[in-house]
Length: 350
Image (cartoon, rainbow, N blue to C red; front, side, top):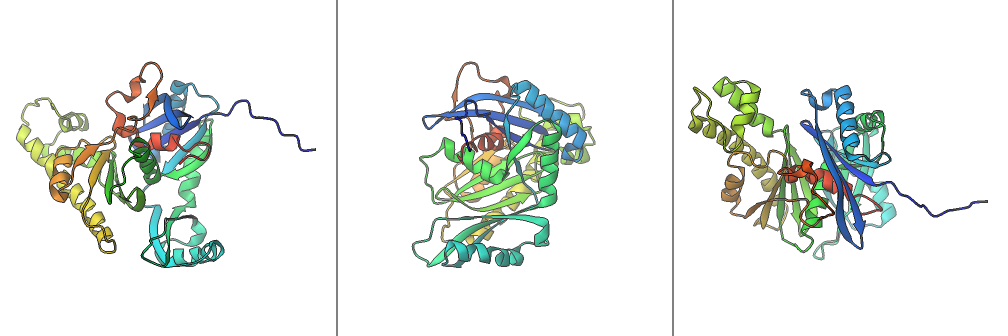
């Protein structure tokens, strides 16, 4: 006999962003279509980043201890060059035909053996002007998936969702700006070792790219050109930077601006690639997030390059806070965008 009982308690989803600089976690609750914040926490990663499994496990345990969530269901994410996202425009076909065609199509665009990757795809809204099936193809190396799952399991938790950071960013943006339907929005998530660029066409993700430039690139440039230690370089990066004997503030500004110019050039390449096949020319807005989103001159250079308004994403903008705001997110809201987007992956919400 199959007896089913109502579930009295469903463990919350913990949105877990495992970055190279820090681990960030967010727990949300959804009620009557609105989100509220249950908790947020972060812990520093070891200096070697995710290449140190033991240090990563320790950081995860520290975050979970701070959150005090013992039975949370973990939603984590991947990014980087082991993940490929490709938009395909295929002849019109039904679901069965599409499922059969995807592996054949994937072989043309994925530079790995298909046996080494996990494939998934999402059918996009149809283009009324074209008799095609628009598909977003996703491929991730199984090795990376297993590595990410293993450190979570070793920390004492069970991963139930493994997403892409780009998709989580879109979740966080749309949850806070559901009323927007811009022709073309560019999300730029600048982290320590890399930057994720997402292009949204009327709210629909159409392109994403990982750029191997982030906040650490600015630090490395200061260390190299000024011959200073890493700790000094980190302090010099931020606004209101301290005076350092023998260091010209104008030279610091010039070094940081030069690195930012390189990053803007890479972002521009992503947008130019999209424009070669898309009808939308003008960018409606650029939205920044990530721990390095306030890099020297980034907002100003992007605004000037694309003649578009630039804003910084507050992933907690439309999220209610019951009681005192968690100290972890004070002044660090934009860096929590991925974790917030992942925490929204509960009960089928995306």
